[in-house]
Image: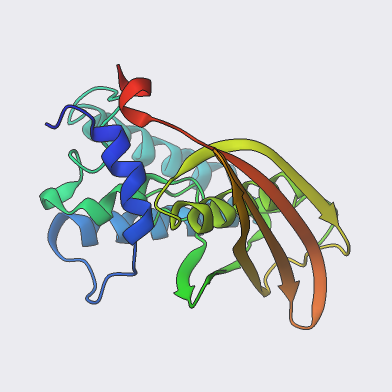
Length: 222
């Protein structure tokens, strides 16, 4: 493992691009399992299963959870890329609670680079509901933090979120593809200023501004 795995992992955001080929092997299996768990999570918010079926499902999940627990390697505070399946540094993103295809908590948000912009697309299911029929504002804030964070990281001087300001213009609908966009406005010393928008079709749902503070990750690791 390198002397500064966390710094290298964060710095690699500057060169992040979507993989050209779909994952295979263990990583593909992880993505499939996480996708199935998302289906279960949403179904639990809107179902009429009887008690016997719920208890049977709970027992099966408990048994499988015990099997997975036995394979754990321990909590690693650093080294996301180094602990990635098959040594693929891109797999570090599997763990993200926003974009992680291997994390069942994630919607997930699908990101791409478009010139000087980062574009993120997601469809939020019922498990992310806040106002009736619409996405919880805290989930929107987390997504903006991820999209703006990806944009600022591409400056080559990645930092950590200092402030994040969200202006909610319209409720964001569930079960509808929405589009986040973000770009860097300017850099002033260690401060990286980024801004973004969220649209559902032609409707502006929210705007965001973030200030990220460039960090010496080697010092942070020490």
